[in-house]
Image (cartoon, rainbow, N blue to C red; front, top):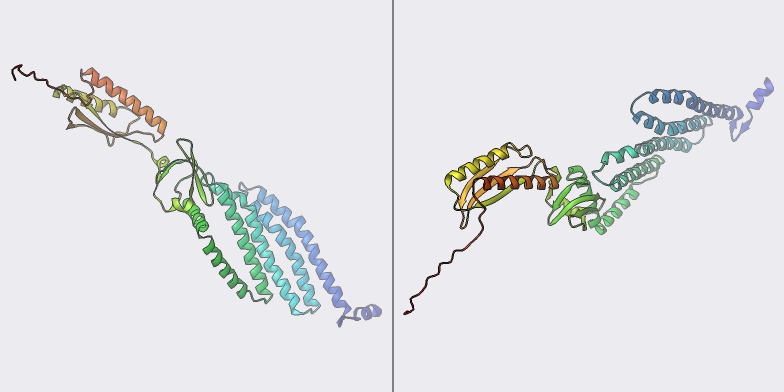
Length: 353
């Protein structure tokens, strides 16, 4: 026993041997706890989260395992360093590793929820913007982690951050148009101006939205041309989204002949109003049908009403059905549609003149 105590008191690197033994035992104790953590706590946690309906807790657990696993090693090194009375620099370094573990967890969390973040966009925008945002978030977490890690080591990162700021300013000035289009894409997303598949009109451009990218939006015109607009242009323009309508307007005039009597006109108008009022594809409010003008060659009837659909093809079908029914009613009362005409009177001159 005395010989064992003597051996333990041998000096190695100005420290008694027993401190090295204690340090290694403590370090291996943390390695054992790490293994125990994986086999028991993690396994039990997986069983619990598997019983829930959501996968959010599964992804959080998956993001936690590796950083927590690494923390056991960090704590083992930290405790062993304290026992061995190693220079405080090592202790500071282990604290930096704790910071590293925290940002490791944050990075894994972003990575685990990457698909969930992309699903938030749905068909509102292309995956291009979603992928860019996820990558930007990853870069932000990594950059923040590096700065915190270096700062904890006592390295002054202020000059580095300032240089990044100046570099960012120079980049922004050089790529201001690209940046404007990028922020325009974000404006389209956050303001929910339109989504892929919507029928929109921006200035003189009209068509169906095919894709919303980081810098541009692609619109398929009705003549099948593909028009690519910068997002900055769209964000600074008035956007008419026809797909957001729940109805379409019918505003028109028809002219009947002057030979139509007042009684016939009253009956025609009344029957047309009843036909439109009872037509299930037309909104009853507002619904205007009035004889309001004496034109040069016809008696003008004004129509102002709305269909129950905003779909272009269905709208055209409704207009066709209405026009045919109006024609039937007008012909029913022995009237007819008028068209511009001229009457020429010829006067025969006397031969003597």
